[in-house]
Length: 499
Image (cartoon, rainbow, N blue to C red; front, side, top):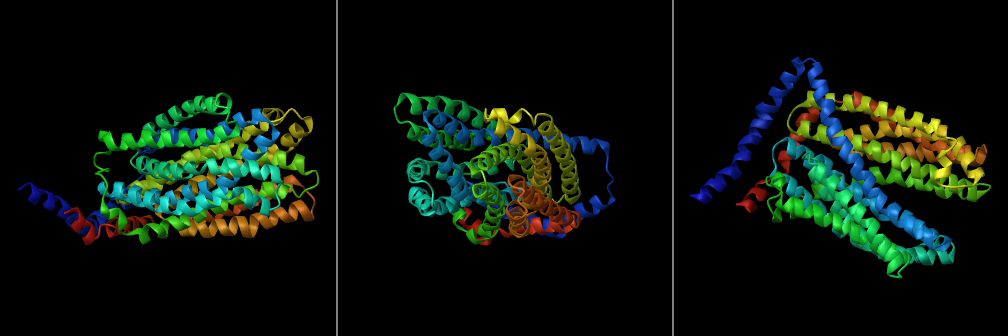
C-alpha cells in the first residue's frame, strides 16, 4: 500500500506538467496583464530584496576576505613571501576560482526556476549534478595549479617569486575543490531564500580562519605555506558546516532527499548553461586582471601597478556588495518565472535596479569624499596616495556602472540567458574595453587613467546592451520558457529511477 502511494506521488508531477503548460501559466499571464502596481506590493518586494541582498553581500565579502586575510598574514613575513602569495592568489583566481563560480551560476537558473515551480526534489538533483561536473573540471585545473611555478617562469616572471607562488598555489589545490562544492551548496540554499545559515557559516569560518592562520603562519613555523594550508582548511570547514545543515535541517527536507542516480542524467543540459555562465564570469574577471598586467608596461611600472592594484582591490570589494543585489534579483526572477508569475519577476527587476542606482550613487559619492585619504589604507607613500586620489573619480564611475551591470547580469542568470551574457561580455570587454584601454594608455599616453577609462567604456557598453535586452523582454514568454526548462528535466527515466 505504501509503495502504491509513493508511485502515485511520483506520477503527480506529470499531471501538474500538463496543467502548468495548458492552464496554470496562461492563467497567471492573463491575471498579470490585468494587474496594476500597488504600493503594498512594491514595499513587499523591496523587503524581500533587502532580506536576500544583505546576507548575500555579507557572504560574498566574508568568503572573499579569507584569501585577503591569508595574504595579510604572509605580508608580515617579508616582501618575497608577500609577492609570491599575491601572485599565486591572483593566478588561482583567474585559472580556477572564477571558473568554478561561473559554472555553479547555472544553478541560479536551474534551482531557482525549479523551486518556483514547486519541483522541490529537483534542487537536490541539480546540486549533485553540478558538484559532479565541477569536481571533474577541477582535476585539470588542479594540474595547472600544481605547475604554477613553471607557468609563471615561462611567462617571464621573476624566478624567486615564481617559485614562492608555485609552492603557495600547490597548497591551495584543496581550496579549488572546496570552493566548487561551496558555490554549489550556496546556490542550492539561496535559490530557496535560505541565506542566513550561509551568512552564519561564512562568519564562523572567517573568524576561525584568523585563528588558524595565526597558528599555521607564526606558531607552526610553516610561514607562507601555513597561510595556504589555513586557507584550504577554512574553505573545507565552511563546506562541512553547510553540508551538515543541508542534511539535517528541516528547511531542506523537501529539496534534499539524499543522493540519487538522477544526478548522472541530463548532464548536457546542465553544461549548456554552465559553460556560458563560466564564460560570462571569466571574461569579465580576466579583463580586470589584464589591466594590472598592462600597467606593468607603463612608464614608472611600480607606481602604476601599485595604484591599479589598489583600485582593483577596492572595486572588487564594492563589487561584492553589488553582487548581493545581483544574487537577490537572480533568485527573485528565477523563482517567479518558475512559478509562472511574469509580472512579479518584472517588478523585482525594476525595484532592484532602482536600489542598485541608489547604492552605486552612495558608494561613488563616498569614494569622492575620501579620495584624499583612501590611499593611506594601502600605502604611506605620498606619491601613491596622490595618484589614488586622482583615480578616485574614475573608480566612483566604474563602481556605479558595476552596480547596474551586476543587477542586469543577475536578471540574465535568473532568466537563463547566460549565452547572451557571454556574448555581451566578450564584445564589451575584448572588442571595446581592452582596445580602448590600450589606445588611451599607450597611444594617447594617459597612463593608468587610460587603462581604467577602458574598463569604464566596457562597463558602459555592457550595461547599455543588457539594459536594451531587459527592456525588450517578453516576460510572459520567459515564464513559459522557464516552465519548459523545469519540466523538461523531469524525464520518464528520472521518474522510473525514483520508483
